[in-house]
Picture 1: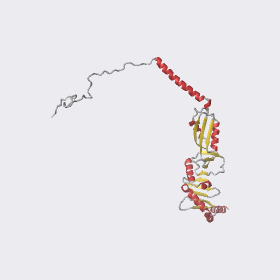
Picture 2: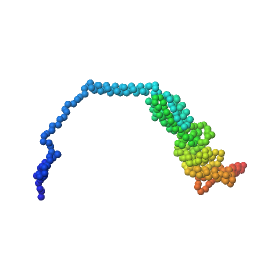
Picture 3: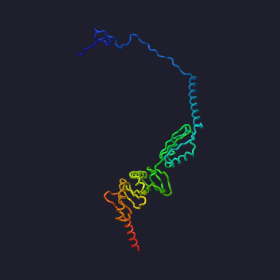
Picture 4: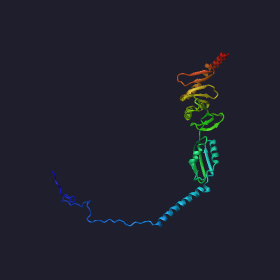
Length: 290
């Protein structure tokens, strides 16, 4: 059954209590809103004045910039080069001395850095402007690790980057690294793996290595200074293999005489090839030929 409610919305339901005026009621008097109908429009004179001020500001700014980049007091006249390598320091000083570096404000340090790191033996360069006319260059040199032969003898770091080139192999302490594949593939990877294997050696033992030949991805052929024996070992246990070779060399020499090569790549056995076998085969071939 439907019940019709005839109470108006604006009347209180209970007349026994005084009811305040509802907050959502419209006021008794109508409020007239006032809007500003007048607008100020800039005249042509005002627009020309604003344009003139803006043009004057940018013209003054351009004049200040031109004065700064052409001022003689801001020309780079002093360059300080800091490096732990005297060769790198001298090389950078000679390179920068050939050019007019110009204004210190207009000098592009990123471009100059990209030119300096192309120099042989330079790994990283930090540049700093020293007002009013100085430039500070901090050069980090590449650390020599190996010699390789590619047309000529090249001294390289752990990344395979060339530090110096020589027509003949210099007689210093860096080992010569040879590749059985002729450096046709994975050049930088082979250099990095060889340097990692050398880092696991003691400095005294590492200094004795004269020649390293890469046989495959994980096998090396080592020759020590003053020792003609070729030592075949794996790069993962190179230190253990060389220590074992040095401790057992005298015993093997007593048993087999002079040795051509020793293969230490297998964990459970050792292959030794004496030089006498090679001499016997040569004499046998001579007898057959006669």
